[in-house]
Length: 410
Image (cartoon, rainbow, N blue to C red; front, side, top):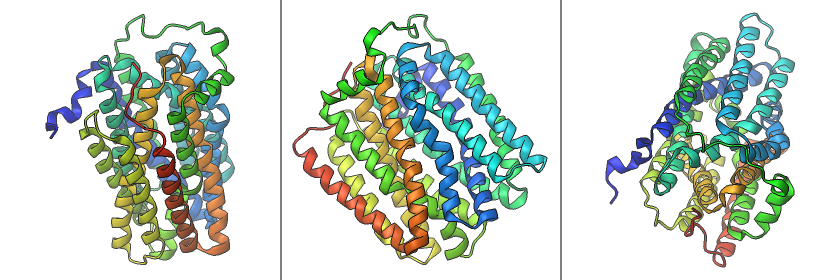
């Protein structure tokens, strides 16, 4: 059994510790803003489809530009790129705050700022993911670092929506946006304090390897990585967009308010935090293939139960289970890709999995939002659950032929 102190062993690396805590503060603010935006949009439109549109506006640009982001992550100074993306994200938060307090935060403005943030994230996400490899010197600690990074995001997902629901109920959306804008002070300060060795981030002259085609050709030789990316793409397109319907559950099914919506989001965040913490306790010799399959099955099964539950407290319990399974599915996939991808292709491969998430999730949100208007919320989630189980079966058949998660690249 792993000692408790070993769960946080990657924090002994100074740069990673700064990165971890700085990102933690900023991510809480980001989730507060995201929760407030979704609630605000649903409050004034009463449309699940419009929630999907806003999600699409933020995430689909990341799909369009993530290839360029991956190339930049492989070629240029990642530290400087990260600083730039944090400043631009802070600018978006400040503009949203100013417009909200002055009464000009309408749907069109929110869509424009969401698109802007999505473009920034296209460059930010591949760089942040690849930098974990750079700032953890001992590669034996890399899986633990990936797991802790996931726990960071899920902790923010737990705390952010709960705080947002409280602030929404007492003060309104404007103050949620303000908190997010202020939170960027922490991450920008942390990144500025990192001690980056000169040789860690140098412009690489990759010649013909600096394009997307080269990355695709590389993936053709990596069956395990390709299979994982396909599974994540399918799950984000057809299963995970059920979160688009949480405001409908909160307001229409449970007759609740912003606080109710915050608790539903936080339930998923709590489950995700438990899952990420559990993942951090696993040793490098763990069978990640079986763990990935198990969590994919749990995800589908928990959605089947959630589809027809009318009790708030039971729904919260199911969302905790769902959050546990969904974060483990994503985190294990990231861990496999981070450890098995050759370093000269890591940025582009991370950009491709970013495409699988940021491209498929907003498209799925549009699809799920429209489907819920046609067949109802419960039937839509039930269909997502059946598809999730089908993905698990399909993945289990393929994984029986390909050994996943047992080999790593240096």
